[in-house]
Length: 395
View 1 (cartoon, one colour):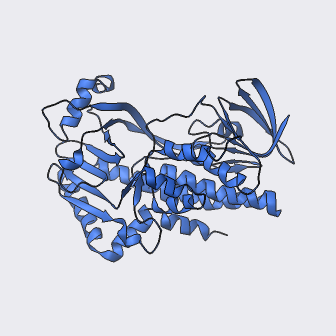
View 2 (tube, one colour):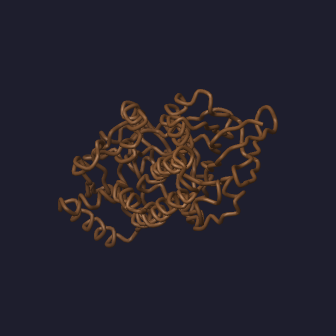
View 3 (cartoon, rainbow, N blue to C red):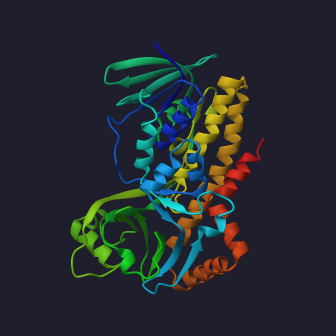
């Protein structure tokens, strides 16, 4: 039987970040990842300022900055008029070493973290069951060599929205699935050359219709579009229909080159607890939310840093298991009151279709951007700095 201090279920950015933090403190870790090999897929791409500050502590913040696209401001915009509210992150210069959002695909973070774990990651392996005892957790895994048992002091579920670990704990994943489906596409078309004053992160209301967002990453734009309700999703995913949707943003004679596309559903859910005995949850296994505002991945990384401190305190400093209760108390209310609540408000605002209400919402946002004190307060909250400070105050 293999033995280790911590088994981390899930080799995404949250699980890998947790593993790096623990290994750097001399704690033994095994990461089990169900996918047979790393993937470079369409997932999160926004890193907030305090997340970059945290990643600097393990030497990957600058690595991401060098591979990403700094976004010094973001905006909410009416289309096609171009009326907008622009949020300048420069006002946070005294609060963070990174007064900007960074647009960088999450797989680049995973790649950098995996390079720091040359022996700890078991690809093509997943947790199939576990049992807790007074001194540890016995974890059953299935991989290329069949079934194996690992004896660990602690188990952490970073295994996503369909978490096997959370299910094994019998915890509820409370919340809802929003009724709409969103279409995501990437294209090399230079929207910035055709839409005056465009930010690298832009949320748009389209006249007479729904909304779309434009998020720029190196070499391409990610476009999220609410589909039409009178046409089937399958029809709207055809190349012809996707081109028509993009033509509605910027008309052009040639067809758009769509590099990748997929539909996705949006959920807002949270586990009823973040720890049971010697088993804890982090990232999407603990909470999922609307991508509006780019808070999901960031919140998961914040979980990883707090949980690493808790595990190190118990394994190295003799702290009792109540330290995991403090992890729950610091992270779960923030997920509920800050991450999920803000993401839900962002989604609701951008779902607004009434023209007069849109104008009123935009006027409110413009008033915030015109007032330095209100702008700073707004960005401290939307950039997740306030939430981290609130969590740190819990003792």
